[in-house]
Length: 144
Image (tube, rainbow, N blue to C red; front, top):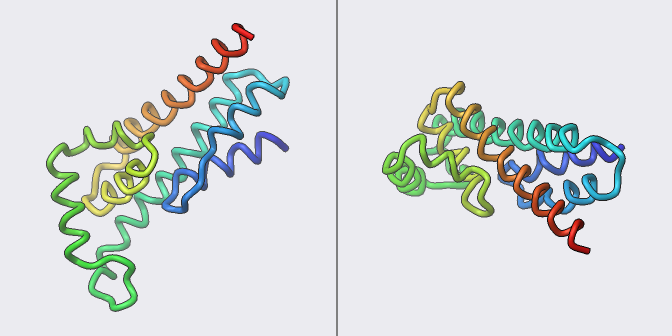
């Protein structure tokens, strides 16, 4: 049950919905008997799939940008595009970062970032973040 909860917390945390998954990950690493690589894999897959949802929403959103109920204006989209285009696909290396990571994956969809490159970079970035958290937990738990 904890792995399912971890998957969904990682998934939701990677979408545009404000949430976090680190506490669930650390709990799973510290309090369960699952191998660390399984826990890290579940969290990474959930987080990458959530980012993929953002990418899809970005791809679909352009056709609605002029609609009066669209939550962002054409000017906001243009500003986001300029920021993303400044650094291009390298921006995706920050997809793990709080606050800015989720919008970056959304804008990557708007700008039609190739899916293969999107998935590769986002998987490395998000998996790397979880790996660092697990490593830090190992350091902290060994020093107590």
